[in-house]
Every structure is written in C-alpha cells, then in structure tokens.
Length: 207
Image (cartoon, rainbow, N blue to C red; front, side):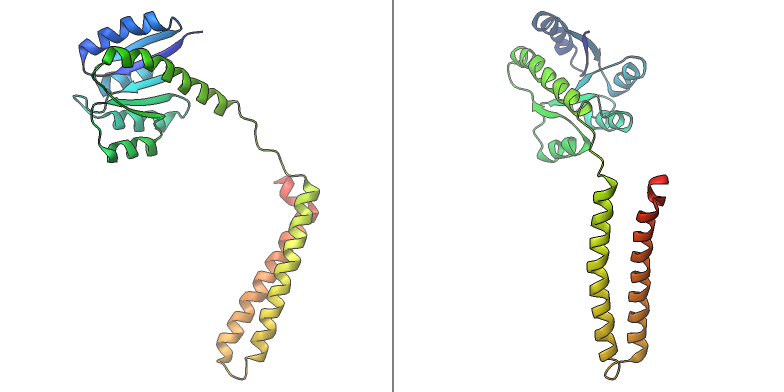
C-alpha cells in the first residue's frame, strides 16, 4: 500500500521537481500537491493522507495555520515544516503544535527532496510505533486496595496528630480558628474512610 504525501508550497517549480524526484526515489510514495493552505485543506478533506510537508509562508496563510488545522482533527498524520525561514520562534511553535520535523530549505533542493523520502519514512514508522504501542496494564484490584489502605492508614495518623496539636493549642490561640481546622481535618478523615469503603465494596469498579 502506497504512502500518500501532500506537499503544500506556492513554488510551482518546486512542486514539479518534487513530482519527478519522489517518483524516481521511492515508488511507494504517492505525491499530492497544493499551492496554498486553502487548497491543502481541500485536498485533506477529500483524500486520505499519511504525511504533510508544508512551507511556512504561503499566499493565504502559514504552514503553522495548516498544522494547527490538521492537529485539530488528527494526530496520526505526519507533519513536516520545510521552509527557508530560520526563525527560532516559528520552529518552537511548530514543534509545540505537533510538527514531527522542522527543516530548513538549503541551496540544493533536489538533494533535499531525495533526502526527504527517508525523513517521510521515519515519520511514518514513528506514527505506526505510537499507534501500535501496548496499552497500559491495569493495576490488579488487590494491589490497588492494599495501596489505598496503606495510604489511608498513614494519612489518618497524620490527621490525628494535627488534631492533637490543635487541642493543645486551644488555650493559646483563637478557638474559632482551631475549631475550623479541626472540622476540616475531621471532614478529610471521613472522606478517606469513604474512599476505602468504596474500594472494598467494589463500587468504583462498577462505575
């Protein structure tokens, strides 16, 4: 099955060269092209695409705008920003928005396009590994229950100590303040007891 690649760039000559070089370099890559962000979004709306390569500056918007639109609907599509603009803030924003690579255009575009085939394969492999990663193992109920009981014992001990100190300080401090602390501590202790009861009864599992 071919890997479908969308190249979004307003440089018509670059798009023409890319069509030839991608076909010559990797027969498994199927190239789609767009000359604006709007056109790229239209392609994405009607076609299944595995990886997007986008220039930063285009006539109607930026590659970051396209990246943001793609990430709003999918995290499985690979995304590469390929631009002549070496602004650090743009690179940081691209990576924060979910770009897989931020690459600068060099003087030898043909050589870069050939190298791009390998980069596209790396992005595809990375996406496949992420999607096939094993789900996190569930913690056995017995272990979770033991942990909750142990935590409850430790926290309750601390709360009792606090209440004891509060009682000793009643003669030296504002009793209203101390009573407020005592009520809060008692409420927390009761909530912990309820949590332990919920674990024991299995109500959390049923939820």
